[in-house]
Length: 383
Ligand code: MG
Image (cartoon, rainbow, N blue to C red; front, side, top):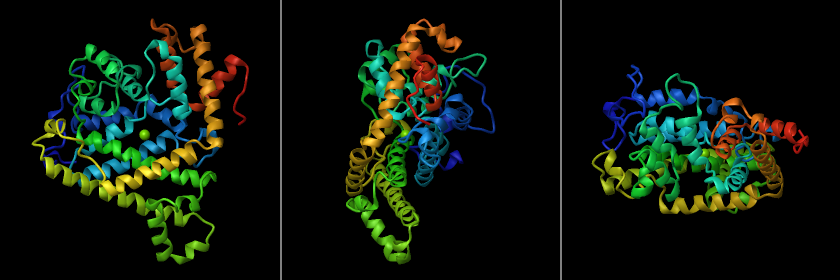
């Protein structure tokens, strides 16, 4: 990426607002490339490969995990960023870090941990992603965390309650939480990653859902977003209708995702032209600029609702996630009563409930299962 060709509303890596602990530059990398490299080398990033996206890790080798989801988000977001002349390196850093705070067992794990932490400030995976890169990674001699630039940290903090924002702002006045108090928008780079995240999981959850047998092509054909491309694929390649393979599904999803990404780029370009932000700082005061057209947005929401009803709440998925919830809740109780069972640096922490939450949130699915079995003597998952 050549910074001289960036759009005026892109975040220029030469004008970064810097790191909490100042560091000398590391040419030839720019500061956002350097953030990306630190994220890829982090322990939390490597753990994503064994964390649930929708299907628990051991349910099948071909389903998405947090890592493959993350890579798909980075790929989509970078393509859009290049077309929009945004900072691709920053987009990549935000995308690769966006799910670092996820617990084992997906959203069920997060819900269980949030319930356990009810009296101690709660637990939120998005806030946890920031906590991972700001505090929990322990790899550098003179600071905790990865000491990322403010732009990457702001992009990672996608949601934040007013209460949490005020708490964070007390510690860092001009930090990532500031915009949740001011009510302003994140950078265009962060906005593009957020949308790419949604488009990526809608498409890959359809793929994984069909692969698992929990949803069918017939059901999907009731959705205009899917049916349009499925019909076109079968017209262009009639031989696929009689084939048992999955090529028709793949080609349908490929066309659907391309159409969504092209729409995202065109609609975002039009929004930028309408609001004409003078520079990246002016983006904060515009309405959200990264968007789909209203028609495609509506169809995308319909797909999302379908997946929620038919896949994420499918009895078979719910059965597995209920087990995950039990594992997390029982681990929390066990470590709270016996902190010495945790790794030494967590066991010694002053704020025990938070240390337990951090420890559990960092676990992979299988490590959580093993620890649960070790501490309770019960084995909840069969494989
Ligand atoms: Mg995600």
